[in-house]
Structures are given as C-alpha cells and as structure tokens.
Amino acid sequence: MKLLTLEASSVSASVCVTEDDTLLAQSFQNCGLTHSTTLLPMTEHVLQASQLSLDDIDAVAVTVGPGSFTGIRIGVATAKGIADGRNLPCIPVSSLCGNAWNVTLTDRLVCPVMDARRRQLYNALFEIRDGIPVRLTEDRLILLEDLKNQLISHKKSVLLVGDGAQMCYNTFITSEELDVALAPSGARYPAAYGAAMEAVRLYREGKTVSSSQLMPLYLRQPQAVRERLAREKQAHSE
Image 1: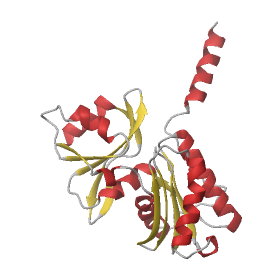
Image 2: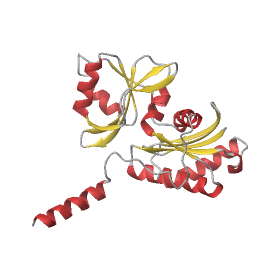
Image 3: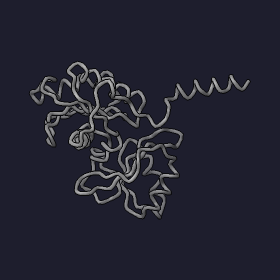
C-alpha cells in the first residue's frame, strides 16, 4: 500500500509517502510558515522524490487532532481535497499517537504533550510493546499539575515528546518524585512518518473513512466559539 500522510496539528508541519512500513520520502518544516502555504508544496515534493503521482496513492492519512485548531483544519481540508478528487479512502490518526511513534525504542512511559495554553495540555500516555505504542489513556485535555501528579503515581521513568515537552520538562524536573527526560529534538515534534505508521496499523484493521466522513476531532471548542458562547450567555443573563 502506498500511503500519503499529512501532519499539521502542531507548530511544525510534515508530509510523507510510505509503501507499507517503508518510508519513501518525507518533508518537514518547523520555521513558522503557515501550513496553508507549505502542505501542498511539500506534498508535491515528496511525490516527486518518490517518483510517484497522486494516481499511485492508495490512501490518504492525516492527523485530525488534538492540537492547533487552525493547523488541524488545514490538514484535514487538504487531505479531503486530495482524497475526494480520486475517491481515495482516508485514515484519521490521533496526533498524540502519531507523536508517540517517534520514540518506539524506549522502555520509558511515553508522554506526548501539546500546549493547550492556560496551563492545560493535550495529552495521552503510551507504553511501547514490541515496537508499537500501546495506549494507557485516551486523548484528553488535562491541567499541567494534574498530569504531573498522575505521572508520579505511575512510578515509571517518563519520556516527553511534543511541542509542550520543554514546558513540561521545566516544570517536572524540579520534582524529586518524578524521573523525566526530553526526547531528542529530532524526535520531539510530530512528524508525518509517525502518523503514517499508526495509519498503516489502522488500515490493516479496516479503520478507514471516506473523504466526506473525515472530520477534525477537537477536545474543546475553538477560542472564537468559546468567546461567542460566553457573550451570548452574558447577554441572556442581563
């Protein structure tokens, strides 16, 4: 199976082409450019580098959340547009699970964290079994202090990945009860290849959707929606 995978849930963005478990080409950027200007050029680049066209692709995978509302929308919209024109199956992937695939050689507890602001994090916990991330929790929105206390209760060494890893490390390292380490910088940020490996597993289990069924998965409402609802609530109470 030849798979095109897009990752745009974080500050970085990435696209890759894989054939089964083999990475053919990957493009990654973390230089602050808007994902809407980078995803399609990166897609063209990895296809050209793989000597493939979209007609050769069997399925499209994309991280659908949690993470940046804007990034997720752009990634999902791009994947839908590519898949819809060729009636390709789509594979929605958790951005946190895709990030955990970056560090499958560790025996530590893998803790992907994405900064959700206001001392909140998008997070899930995984352990690596036979080179595969296995969930210990669902994707969730959690307070920084609550995550710290939960990690202490696991009584295991912890490896942090994700765009919130440095922030968490700076907080957690002061605790004598918690053995915590940062993933190397090259493995810290979400990348398309990690999402692709999870997508291959899901594809083999038949967990695909049509382009019309592909939707973002937010763990909370976008800020603009929250502010609108707050204004409406205040107006009704006056």
